[in-house]
Every structure is written in C-alpha cells, then in structure tokens.
Image 1 (cartoon, rainbow, N blue to C red):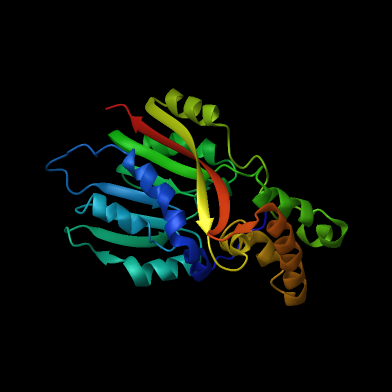
Image 2 (image 1 turned 45 degrees about the vertical axis):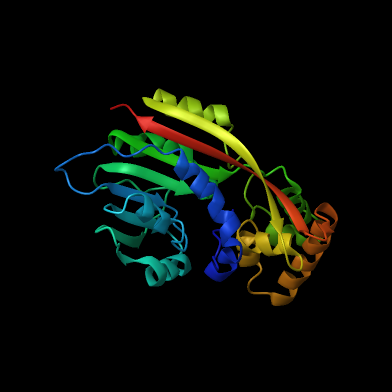
Length: 274
C-alpha cells in the first residue's frame, strides 16, 4: 500500500458525516477514573488528522492534557493552526508527529483513542499489548475503523486499479481487504489483555449532496493512495477519476434528496482492569 499524501480541506468537506462515528464511540467511553491529586487526565488521540474530533475530547474532559498524533504534515499543520493551545477548562491540546506502527506512550495514559486510523496501519492489532500496558488501571483504549472494504466504494476502486490500463501504475497501491480484523478477533485480543471489552458494528446511511458526492468522499480518504501514486501524471489521474466516477454513479444512484452512501464501521471500547 502506498503511503498517501493527505488533503485536509478535501477530508473536511464531509466533516459532519466523518465526525459522527467518533461521537458515537465517545458516548460509550466511560468516565475516566478520578485521580486526585495525580494531575489532569492524560489522553492520546492516535491518528488525529486535522484535529477537529480531537477538540471534542477537550469538551468531554476540559481539564485534560490531550495530544493528537499523526504522521501527515499536512494534517498536523491544520490541527496546529485550528485547535492547538490551552482549553477553556484549564487543560491543554497539542499535536505532534508519530507513526502508529511504532508509537508507544512515554507516560501512563487515562485514555488512548483512535478514530478512522488503524485500518491504515498494517499489524495494528499487534500493537494492542503495548498500548494497554501504557494505560493506568481503569483506563480505556477505544477505536473505530471503517469496515466496508467489500462495499462498491472500495471494490470498484480495486477492480479498476487491477485492469490492464492501470495495473502497472496501481498494483498494490490500495488498502488490502484484510486491513480490518473481524469483530470477534478484536474482542478476543483485547479481552485476553485483561480488558472489559465491547465491540460492535454500525452501518450509517449517509445522505450526500452535490455533484458526484461519493467520488468526492473517496477523494478525501480511500482514494488517497491512488491519487498519490498518480500525482506526477495529472492526465492519468484525471482519467482514472473519470472511470471511477462513472462506476460510482451506477453503484450509488442519486435521488432528489441526495445520494445515499451506506457505510459500515467497527467500534471497540476496552477498559483495563482497575
């Protein structure tokens, strides 16, 4: 899989739809254990992107020191400008570069949370022991990932990339179909690490508006590796997008009220034994 270049403006074009799963995940995260006089809660947002959902953590825990981690310079630049600094509740929100494949907390944390990131991280489930070990007793590890690689949104993208015209340029570029584990596998891994674990799936019916909105959605996330691989050849990039757009129009027909994009996501909340 090609490491994609990210475009915060494109990603945020559907910010409301993309943020909803995070708020649903956050609603299932328990209150953090009170630890006076141990200082403010310590929270990590792994794969923070442009920081818009990281800021929601400060609303829930206004006294916390919250750090958003990401490996995209473009995303981090946006997060620094829009969200970094002291919070109204006396906490602090900051952002720094990190790679989830190797990141290990340098201090105990009350909450490690990740929103729509781990599916980009090969072997991410093998990192769970290190992250759980870094939680304070009673702390929480929570994440959500898209779980829809069998949907037309992705299947058509992969099929097109595998055609003779595009195979040489895009072979192995897109995410693999095994980039997300089965729900039961996540539950088993986290429960064996001594966590009370809740795992579930939700399929959202996003109503998108505008011209070719499903293509516009994909350009912010799943299509990024292909766009990165074709960035040096704008003519080829535009041709690939045109072919993919036509396939999406058939798969996701528009209606008077908009275009419906069914989107399944997987959630997990694991609370470490106190």
